[in-house]
Structures are given as C-alpha cells and as structure tokens.
Length: 275
Image 1 (cartoon, helix red, strand yellow):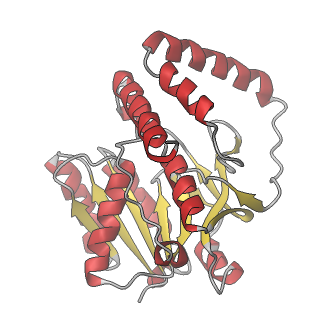
Image 2 (image 1 turned 135 degrees about the vertical axis):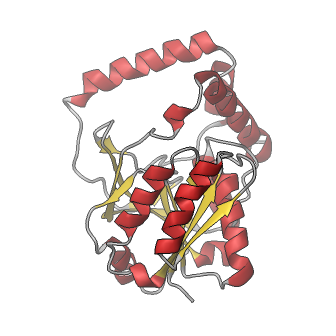
Image 3 (image 1 turned 45 degrees about the vertical axis):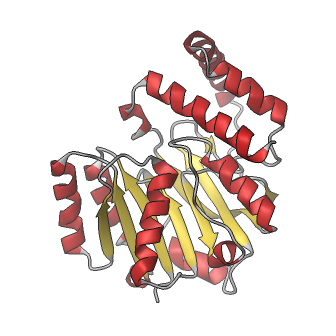
C-alpha cells in the first residue's frame, strides 16, 4: 500500500500536468506515492501527451473520462477507479497542477508532522503568486445562508458579477501594499482552499466522500459541510506550504460558462446543505 495518492485533473493543459508530475518526482517520498490524472479533455493529443508521463513513471496512472466531469467529479472518478485495484492509502491529496512545493521534503513533512494521521483534512498554507497572499484558511467559519443567497442572486447577472469583480479587484490593489504575508495561526477552520487539500483516510472511514454533484466551484463548501456532518475537522497548518500559480486552467473557460458554473454550484450547496 502506498502512503499517499495524489489526484489531479487535466483540461486541455497536458503540458502543465507533465511538468507537475516531474516536479512531484523530486519529492523524497516519490516512491511511496501514486498519482492519478483524470483527463477531462476530449482531444486525443492531450491524452497522448499525458500517456507519455505514464510510461515514464510506474506510479502514474492516466484515466480518460470520455467527458468533461469538472473538478471534483473528476477527482472522485479518479479515486473510485484507483480503489478498484488498491487499498485506501493513509492520505489522499487533491491538487491543482499549477502547484509548486516549498521544498522536496514537503510530502515527507506531512508524514512526520502527522504520524498517526488526523481526524479529517489538513489545509496547508497556499501562497498565491497572483494575489500575493495565503489562500488558506479559505473560510474560518461557516457561510451564512443569506450570504450564499446573495451570491446566487449576483451570479444571475453578468453585469452585477462584472461590477462586483471590478470592485473586488480595486480593493485588492488598494490592500496589496498592506498585505500581511506572515503565516496565520494554526487552528481548526471551516473549509480548506480547493487548490490543494490533504485528506486523511479517517475522513473516508467516518463516512466522508468526494461525491460533489456540481461541475465546478464551491468544492470548499462541500468539503466543509461534509466534514461538519461526519464530525471530523479541517485544520490549517502553516508548517506545510505550497505555491499556487492560479487560474491557468480556469482562464481556458469562457466567462459565461464560469458564471453558470458559479450559479449552479452555489444553488446546489444551498439546496443540499442549507435546507
């Protein structure tokens, strides 16, 4: 049994995926991990490029989903297929492919810091090279129903969403010079950022899952709600740090599609968890 399985999704971004696998191969724990890449592309050339990395590394498996499953549906498919032939490892990591590790001991550090695991999920420090800030904790406290209803209303309108994003970008620029780049206090939080989640097998043993029905976005809320439901926890740990060169995949999607995905995801979370 491998110590860790890392789940990734490709959508017309195979070169980045290959680079990420090569980056992972520099980890000292590489021989004790498996990597599952779910190819959401319908382009055969994408799959061909990914297959080359599968030939280079015996612990890499590429799965062709035959359709674009989205992010969490993709990783859920990847984990389901992986478990057909393998035992549940001690750790399941869900990762974007635009991630860089602080050093080549990162995965070993996870094992060293948590030799007995954790009842739930670790949210590492995720430093965004775009925002110039730590993206964790994604949410310290549970979102109110009113806030999610407001977001759902916002996502109905392209104009309202455009104006809200403009205001948010202005706020980011005004605050950028005053950003606190020091790590926040390690503590229990509501939800981890979806770019990189470290999930202990205990989460699954207590009934947790990755069976998120929406296509894209709000995966963090889903994880926060499932963790809350099964009585485990999400723990922010700044001793573990990765760098996130974000939006390289999302930028490939059209804005109108992003708006629909955002609306559908918030609507799903409201109906599923805020009845």
